[in-house]
Length: 400
Ligand code: MG
Image (cartoon, rainbow, N blue to C red; front, side, top):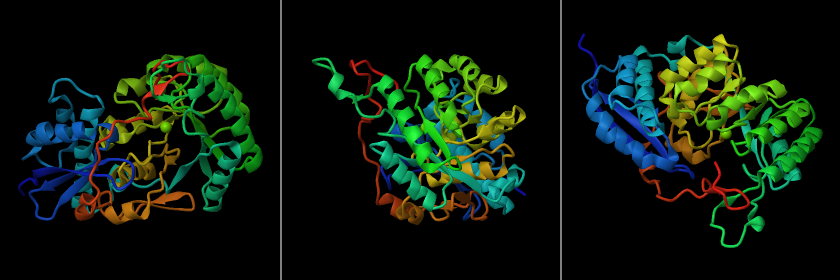
């Protein structure tokens, strides 16, 4: 039987909510057979689009759709320089689309190809925010009523209240925050939430790499008494050497990795058991193929998965997360963004969440399709990101 080959690669850009989504469609030589993948790098979507259209598409046309591993390995080094979020996201869309096609050819969901289910559904956590502790409690209680048991609590987003009042004269515009005030305010908020919600609800918190390493260690230590399910991105990727010191100081469970783009970044953390959850943005590391490898490595070292899953992951990407979650023996938790109805209409088969669990639909592949006509009605807008123009109280540029 002649091989089924890649006939065309198309990039679909759409913005049904605030986030610009990048979806790849691989069309095969077999009539009616195609696959979808997620390449969403919402802040740099044009760059990913160009990488696929001008570099990867000419490289891919005519290749055997069954040879996912061979294509992944070759695509990663074809430009000689490798990794980086643009190339990784571009390759991810191809990789996921090929897994989707393989599932359709086998007439099986992708989790079957990975080794079959270890569970029927994936536990998810959702985000409760608020202007003050009372509002965070109120929002968390609403989620609990809907059956959620894992809740990430933040106050005023990632930096607390903007510290604009403290700026020196002539300071530049930006998204200001005060790291030391953040630590004080978050400790008070998390204590209030724990007292109000009791011990049964699992709480999570995301520092978003916004503290100096020594302050992050002090914060993690002070949080120990509130028994978080995990503390996310306590340190920036540039500061991962500090994890050893953080680990030595407290038992607050640690989740890390949404900014990682290279296996060197998670390898040491796993090998030295310095974290408890890996949580990469799967498209930013290159798709299901490297995520499967990272999950297996983590499993050997007793570390669980918690893949990144906010609204800057397309429904195809969320389905890829879910299929890995259902299979991984070391699955921990899945982040979930609660898409509005429009997204379900645009992406038929988008995973559904009921009472805190995310369920697959058991269609072959990832089980998600796209209504391209509807997607075209919501074109991506160009805008300069504001929230990433982060500054400390004296105007110093800071990591977002
Ligand atoms: Mg995060």
